[in-house]
Image: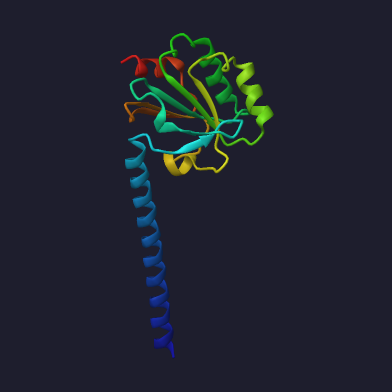
Length: 172
């Protein structure tokens, strides 16, 4: 009986180790695939506040495309938006896209109005109502910034980022 119990314990332990190894490997492969995919701007869509679908890869690829994942109540995101408003002229030759998971249209539009984002000709405010951002970009941390040109990733930032860093990337 003791021998059977030992074999059973060994089998359970080995099964657990194999299960954890398999999950770790799968997680690693998923991260690796997302890392590969994020290098190129994907054909993915998000909605305007009026419900219109906008595909990110349809913006002019010859101009840098700055994608910012944000939430209107995030203090760091508010800082980013203020800085964008203050540096609108320097960002005028970019495609500026801000995407939020927030479902409050009033809060989203107030955020854009207070930070003078509606005044930008090159600005698009989108909702991530299907929570797909993480699937395409590998993160749902706010703020997250991705800068593309010719559909290739130039730089990504996680967390509050100085506008000077963003400007240095798009000006090179």
